[in-house]
Structures are given as structure tokens and as C-alpha cells.
View (cartoon, rainbow, N blue to C red):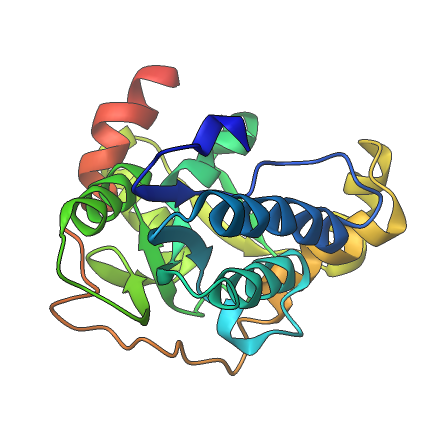
Length: 230
């Protein structure tokens, strides 16, 4: 609470937790944020949420972001929820596979979804925080420059990195086994897999348009960030 005393605007990102249930962890962090907003009378909040949070259920870990949206809405503050796409930086979580020319996902490799640079999310958040005239509750998609499939991502990376990258759909059972081997509990594994499973047949509440499209391309990001790491 003391960290937010006297502030006039809050940018909130639920921090990672070690909770057995990741959704419960989001709830706990969201409750802390909402309490700070109420107790310190913070008038405006920008929350880094996610595409899929609007569904409220069926998106695994992201369901906790939907619950945080509800908690912040209930404070009475003016709130904007940034519904962000799939981070380019998620590719950094499996550099060994990229080095080996592999790009795996439990999603069908032709399934398109928004991909976005985290730097662009920060820029959108800063503009929103500094804009003084908006009031009420808002949601804003942050979708990157294009919806991409894993096949298209592999093609872009192949061109930038100068190596053959192939996208493969992985069975959920294979991914689940790897996550359990890495130390995740069954609840944590289900929350992780649910984030991808919820994408199937889903259309974001905030459609792609001028306001939701951000400029940094995957190719530009890969050239600047990913290529030097390989």
C-alpha cells in the first residue's frame, strides 16, 4: 500500500507467483492491487491483461487476469484493461528448440492469433497513463502488426535467422509430461495448457483495427533481439 500512496495513476501487471493454483495467485495479486487503489484513492489504472481474459473461463492461467479485471472494475476507479496478444518474447523461453530449427505448440500450426512486442505494450500503456481525459471502464486490444500462425512465424524466423525453422503441433500429453518433469504440479500444467486451448474458436472482444494494431514486426524484433542470442 505504501508504494502507491499519493500516486495519480497506476500501471498494474500481476507478478508471477509460486501458488499451486496460478489462477488463485492472480486473484491474490489482483486483490492486493484493488485494495491499494481503494485505500489510496488512485483515480486511474491501466492493467496489463490478455486476449482471452474477456472469456472469464476456459483460458487456464488467463482466467486469473479476467478475475483481476473484475476486481479493478469494482474499485470505482477509471480503468483501462490492455488485452495483449502473444508476446514475441515467449520465443526466448525455448531457445534450444529454435537453435535446433524447431517451433512447437499445442495449437494447430495454421491457427492465427495476435503476436506483439512487449515494448509496444509499454508504449501503449505509457500513452494511456499520460492521457488525462479518459474516464470510465475501457478495454483496448494490443495486437501487434498482424495475426500470425506458427507456420508463418517459422517462415519469418527462417528468413531472419538464416536457418530452417519448422513449426510442429505437439500433443498436449507430450507438453504436459515435459512440464511435470520441470516440476510443475497438475494444476499448474492445466493452467498452462489452458491458455492455448482457449484460443480455439475464439475471437477477441477488441477486433483488429487502427487502435489495436502496434508497429513492431516479428521480423524486426527477431533481428534485434533473437538473432544475437543464437
